[in-house]
Amino acid sequence: MAGTKKILLLGSGMVAPPCIEYLTRNPQNQLTVACRTLSTAQALASAYPRAQPISLDVASTADLDAQVATHDLVISLVPYTYHAAIIKSAIKVRKNVVTTSYVSDEMRALDAAAKEAGITVLNEVGVDPGVDHFYAMKTIDEVHEKGGKVKEYHLYCGGLPAPECADNPLAFKFSWSARGAILSQRNASSYLDQGKRVDIAAVDAMADGYSFLAYPNRNSLPFKEFYNIPEAETVIRGSLRYNGNPQFIQAFAGLGWLDQEKKSWLTPGITWAQIQQKLIGAPNSDGSSLIAHIKEVYKFPNQSESERIISGMKWLGLLSSEQATIKEGNVFDTLCHQLSKLLSFNPGERDLVMMQQKFVVEWKDGKKNTIINTLELFGDPKGYSAMALSVGVTCGVATQLLLDGHPALDKPGILAPYQKEMCDPIREIVETEGVKLVQEVL
Image 1 (spheres, rainbow, N blue to C red):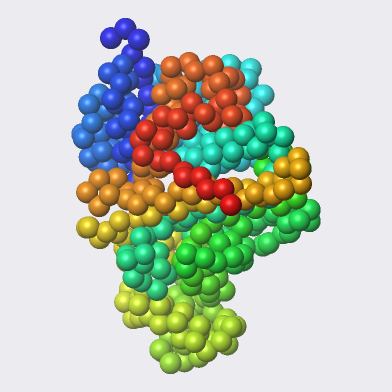
Image 2: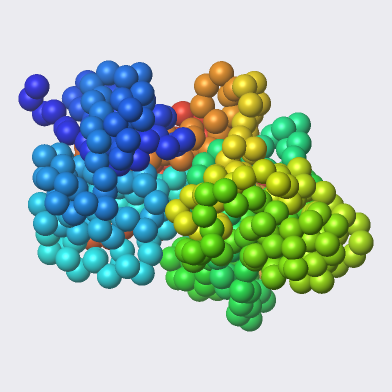
């Protein structure tokens, strides 16, 4: 077919289906769904027209290069650690790339090579990052056009179970990778608070409301420049979880469960209680003595919190005599496998993507307003989850605009949507797909 566009989609996870569905609406698009496990790719591709499955291990440079070379564009929905290698493959054969991930330092280092090859590498076109940028740039541009100054910018976003489904000790269920979800809570973070830089090593509760805890995530400082708000005295970007979840993740860390180093003693046949015994150096794995040692090693803030966390660990089976299923030879991936089994959505349950932006604006006459943009998006138990829709369809829309040669997106280099002219065309279409923030001025 004349004008046919061949798209290589890497990854077959939870957010892939809405992306594939959107792109296959266009009869000129042909998709190749690539996954390490062929049966997984086959199951996904079979639901859509003009989509074919292949088996591909993105860790194999030769195989990756061969597939990238035969397509017009690559969408990477695999873990961000592979993005730089994928971009390098695309640079060799001058093919465009789209990811939903933050631009890492490793990816940014490829900017000059991408420009020299004349390719576009469009990133941060999911929900967070992605939809947050679209509305930030829209609001900031409107304020600046009216002569106002953005003195404070706050963003918090969370992919959560709907309140009625938050029925487990972590008050959480996985609408995306368990590994990614937990690691996102362990990122070092920095933010600007009333002109002062604040650095936080890991999770730290910042504010509450709607029964959430909000905490800063990653480095918010560059967004003062990215968003062109030099006047801002406070810039905070962070995540939302239900109260009790961040404290549980901290306890996991303090008790050794987030250790990603391979352990020679972590072998098939070992029980969960024995793993905990090894992690904290307890004398044995007997229930009462193991719990006593847990309380010695990890300093709970009070007795009720101690009881809550330990009860939750029992519910998760982490203090039991059941044999653990070992994954990747390390404790963290072994834990993630267990959590994925126990904390998944059941039929009929729905997730929630909650995003809120707050802008404190100072006008020329000295008056101040607070502008709040809110997304409260529930998943459809009979269709897409809120997370899948908001990430997948946004990625699909951005990809189609790039395929169509939209001048704001079709530029060489490592890009992210930090300019209104890039954000508006994506946002306007994504709104028609049901992902839209509502504004309130206080």
